[in-house]
Image (cartoon, rainbow, N blue to C red; front, side, top):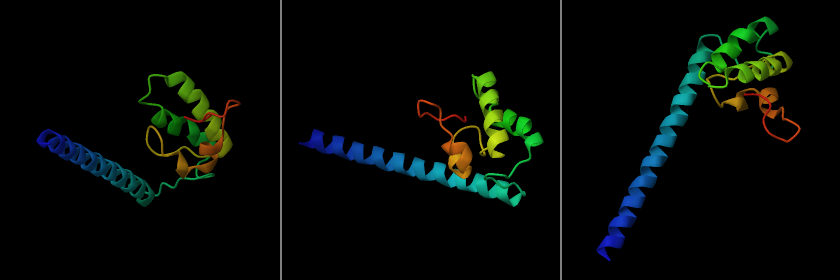
Length: 111
């Protein structure tokens, strides 16, 4: 009985830790978005000019091991949407066009 209770307590502590980490990540992402917005950076469709795409895609793809395909698709998406989400991965909800463009198989087209 005591062993079961200690396992349940350990599981509860693990769940609380994961929840706190998740909240911390969300908070950090919101701070990053707010910081970029304060610097005059705005995200969303039409927030970039086509000449800005290579620079923004270089930033977006800088931490991937698949640099060439990332750059190819990012620039293709950027030219269509005139938007590249903040960060190196995710955050696509900030740029609806970039987020909603899908491959023929239904997967995400934009990195």
